[in-house]
Image 1 (cartoon, rainbow, N blue to C red):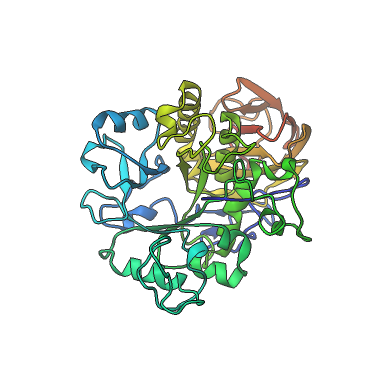
Image 2: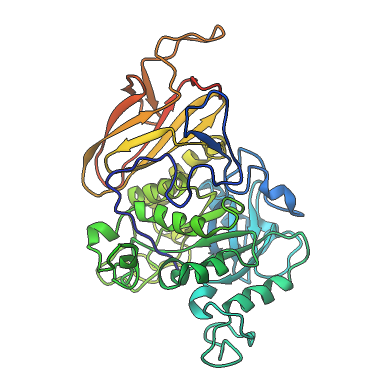
Length: 440
């Protein structure tokens, strides 16, 4: 399962608050960069997966876009997910066959399989085994006593024991939950985040979880914990907060990729809460990526609501499937940008938005998502912007404004300043600036 929260009204940084300028292992300055501005490589580095035998694809054009615990029992089923732009199964049902996967499709499994690209360790161990090194019985939830000594915690031992059975040089992955994001101290949570795995995520389902708005869950993120209103709680920006929370616990900072979970169905007894809309899912995905997620995992099951199904993306209509396909296509198209270094300290944001600056092939990209459900104007000031009309090395003159990717429009830019409208909490705007004036 999964959870997160953000109430940011004024942002004056170009990266999530989980890390400070100059602290990342891949942070470097440059001779032409303004004071306080630096470059930071993506967490784990672009070639992270090359360290593993039979690992996932490496390089700038690959971003994991996965489906949690799917089922593939035929080539036709795999083709359905392939058409949606999904390139990874993050665990599979036991009746699945990896031989059915098509070109560009990969799988992580919780059981040994020579075709697997990595191993999935325990899911949400932080919630059901607790932060401790006690002996583990080998039981999972519903199978009996978890820890050998009742009343003690053994979650760290669970992950260590599971990892000990993984062949050397195999990538390992763990998904965590509300223990890490809400209930545990930073020290306890860091013990899980930095545990026996190479890639980590945490699942907070802000759109559909009936409990997450409570004072003991999402409300704990406030200086004075209290129950959140629906407007504060059911906000796509909170998925970015979850990524921030996990990234802030990684030690050394930036040393391992953090993936993000987003639900596309209704994982709970729905009550008055239905599954998320495509616009919400899109904003949650982009909020996660802007806050540093190196991959996306969709929770594709519905246990209630209008379309109960183990395969929501197959069974619950063209509108959802087509919407997810469009989101995934956009993410895939911009993978080289997302996998490029971030320009930290170069952007000031005034208004309710979260943003990051990416540098790709000399161009600057400002990627921004709304941080409030209310409509409003957001003003940006960006360093390193080349003056309009300037020609360098025989290249075409710099345009008068920034192109808004995928929206067939530009925004006027004056001395690195520009303003745009964010219509609601689902707003996502991606801006491209031709060239740069900092030698990047």
